[in-house]
Length: 83
Image 1 (cartoon, helix red, strand yellow):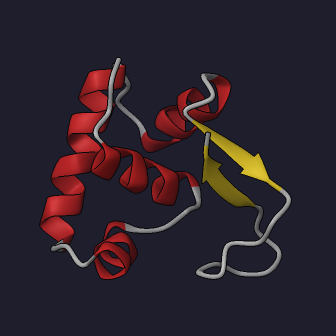
Image 2 (tube, rainbow, N blue to C red):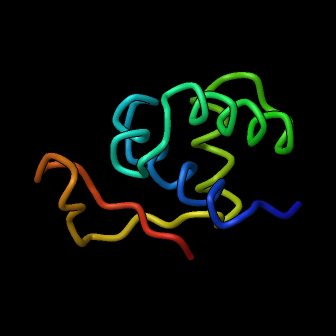
């Protein structure tokens, strides 16, 4: 399974707990475009729920959780980085 660079960016932000609107602002996209990316990622991976997408991404090392903090998120949340 191969995801584009943009889909990997969207996935990383989803795993970081960002909403479609927040992701859209961060990446300079429309919220609808982000929702389409999310749906396409989920279809590619074969999951139906965002929680399953997050679990799959972490378990399959699509993203990794780092102890470094994401400047876009609350200090108490771990930063997710692309591996």
